[in-house]
Amino acid sequence: MTAIAIPIGMPNVIEVSGARKSFKTYETPRSGFLASLRKKRIVKYALRGVSFGVRQGEIAALLGKNGSGKSTLIKLLSGILHPDAGTVRVLGLDPWSERRKLTSRIGVVMGAHGQLWWDLPATDTFNLMRAIYKIPERQFRERLEFLTNILELKGVVKRQVRTLSLGEQMKCNFVASVLHMPELVILDEPTIGVDLPSKQALRTAIESMRDERKTTFLITTHIVEDLAMAEKIFVMDRGRIVYDGSRESLERYFGDRREVNIEFESAGDVKAYTRFGKVLELESNYIKLEVEQAQLRNRAFINLLSSENVVDYSVMERDLKPILLRLYAQHGGRRGHV
Amino acid sequence: MFEDAGKYAAFFKMGIKDELAYVGDVIISLILRIGAPLVMLAVWYAIYLASGTATIGGFSLSQTYSYFFAVSLVAVFTVPSVLWMIQDDIQGGALGANLVRPVNYVLSTIVMDLSWGLLQAALIGVPMGVLLVLLLHIALSPMYLALFVSELAVALLLMYAIEMLIAALAIYLTYINSLYSAIYTAIAFISGMTLPLNFFPQWASGILQYALPFQILAYTPAATFIGAIAVPQALESTAVALAWALALSLAAALFWRHAMKRITIAGG
Image 1 (tube, each protein chain N blue to C red):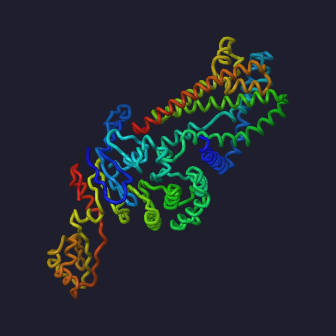
Image 2: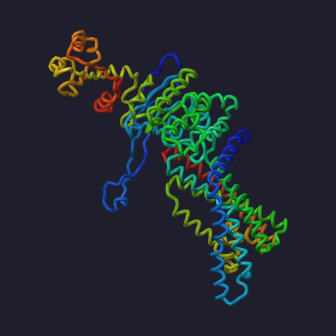
Image 3: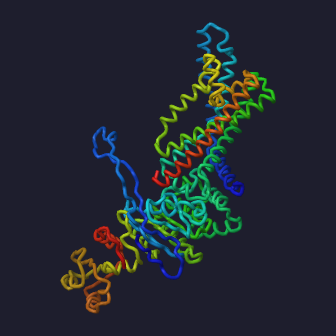
């Protein structure tokens, strides 16, 4: 059994050790006209011994490609699935055998499968949640006010859900899942198909709940931009956690590279720049370089960027995509420790 | 259980609101349900004409007309849609989302369905019943009315048990439309929906009325509504149906417990 690294300080809200889960399913090996009649029974290993922990008040991101096992893990944590092997504890409870008790203390947003009633305004769903979680009237009003303000939903919640945009639906789903102010919120792909302002509003709400209430968040995503708010990142690939650590450590571990765009007044001396990094794009008056973070403090490189021929230069925000792609390619089934 | 009554009352309220969101659909449904038996009237007119007799199975043509109107009335009160709600949740993948709330999924689904059923009963069933009493000159005594209402309650319990048994199967099979059609066609035949049970040979009619429960879904309440059945006979049939309904409800509850374990252990 794999040992979990128990963080010092705040208690662990999620503790998973050696969790395994497989499903029996079918595949059609051939593609002919009658292929559907000849199904082959297969076993799909969704989780192959997952261990990790999340502390109280932490925002943790669970990153992975489609089919990497993220959703299965979420179902294990919320008690919808029982692990084949290993142990899962959430808020000190066994999610599967104590699901009813656990569901009062957690909030779960499962991607497209929302809590909202399609033909009714979102306020009706919110009132249903008030009854389900037995939220006192005054607290309900205060929380609703807080959440609709921060998510900019004031004029939205009285409209029929089916008429709302995807972003508005997702924000309303979020409200419905956190109105009871759970200790742990699990968000399965919360920003999929959501526009930029809605994504930003969701991030603000998440950070605000973490800061004010010490709410713990576990967010599954395959969108790198969602990692901006996460203090802890887990990367899953083919049913295993291949990385468990901070965002900064992930960047350091893989070289912490940055992209630098440089525009020249006239054709520049490319060779002078290639000494500092790898050329990603090259035009007569423009060059894009990938450089090590340390190069940004290199006097020679800074002097070069300050030369008269340089009209403008910019250092791009850190992009985890290439790092993750490298990680997927490199891990070869081993867990990355930092 | 009782401390959670407020939760299920909220589901009930949501069910009503949801149904009323499309009141036009409810009105169209009313027209269709009242109009549907008219097709059967034409068929039975032809049968009586061809047979050359005034009565079949002890029913005159006008009694047969009344019977089929009454069968339609019974169906308004006793055809739940809980099965389709659960199948949608299973096929659409929403079942998991429903399991992460501190409510009993099966109970909350039944409560929502009941709210729709009661709304239909109020908007369609009651006006339809009054209309039939007036148009068909049915002398519905308070005793028969009470008996009719009790039979509807037992019929509803039986239908829920049957639908929940089939719905639990959906967890194993995913698609249960054909299975439901086959079962419902058989039930329609042996419950008196397509043919009054007194039209069957005596031995078959005896089994269907006093050994099997399905008569409570059509024949017994319809015959009670039009006054074509004696009180002791109706009571006996209802008691048989009630015993079956309770046994099938228990079986459905046990089957669901097993099915839920399958979802959570095998992954559905």
